[in-house]
Length: 389
Image 1 (cartoon, one colour):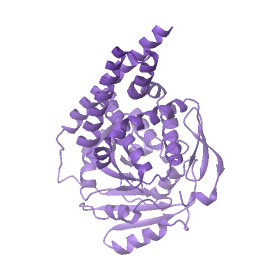
Image 2 (image 1 turned 120 degrees about the horizontal axis):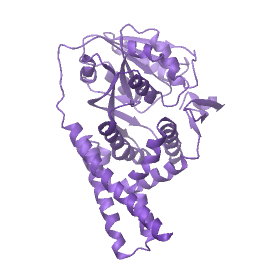
Image 3 (image 1 turned 90 degrees about the vertical axis):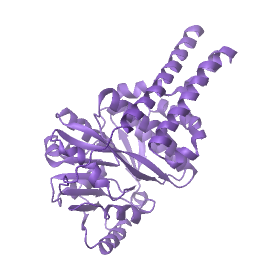
Image 4 (image 1 turned 180 degrees about the vertical axis):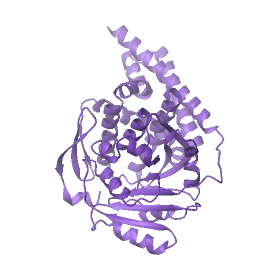
């Protein structure tokens, strides 16, 4: 039995080596693509920005969307409560950028358990243009953002465009989270894109045609799902539209202040992945080479020969983390704290294991339960944390 256990762990280690190498290859292929910019393609766009509470440098994040080198676009901020501190920030933005078409929607209309989706639906009621760009409140962009993200929409078969992102952090816990995003999560996105194409979208920002959105049932169709971004891409793909990964990389601010917040967020992501892509979630075992290598060393009692495979696993892991996080994404956090990757891997592995049994989590002052279908059930609400979350 011990021999079989050793063999199994050895195979998993070899699989991790293959995965690390393949992720490097997928990154090289993607980032070697030459961006095609048609300066004459600039259809009018409506940006929908659901907001709830303050993020790091909220004003600067919002202002970056008002400085776009783009001829015609509209920004709609949507919030549920007029007492939300973001409301004053939006009013300041409106005053500071009078030349930009900006609208603030305050509505507590709820179409499902996912309040972010309700915010998006409320914002859409004021949309002027047939191209929608969904953008989270905690991202920051450069003036060429709209011009570049919208380019794939020249192809009428494209229904959704989404983007990779680069973490911007403050504090050690946020650094620890950011390392996982740049060197682990986004590596998985690039591998998935190369193996099967984009059949999902990423949450921080995505563009979608209103015709595509209507065909998949509108925001109502995803209002009870945790993974609203995944569902928009997944349903669009099922409807026959292409989901494209843009070459543009956005900056995503992370304000995680303590380890508990990081764990809650990771559990939420893991639960989301498990119900959205159950086989894909199970397959993540082949990517956790750092943790598996330790188990392999324990199973072989640290014999001299048994250090070779874990050594190769760790080497390829560091090369992959550098190739994607540092070289491709140009993430300063990954560059400065690359040596923390193994520790982050161990945390990810532990939370991945928990993801098989966990189904409840906290999100913006609410305790939620995730059903097997991927839908949310509201359990409790802490009203004191909703606006500050």
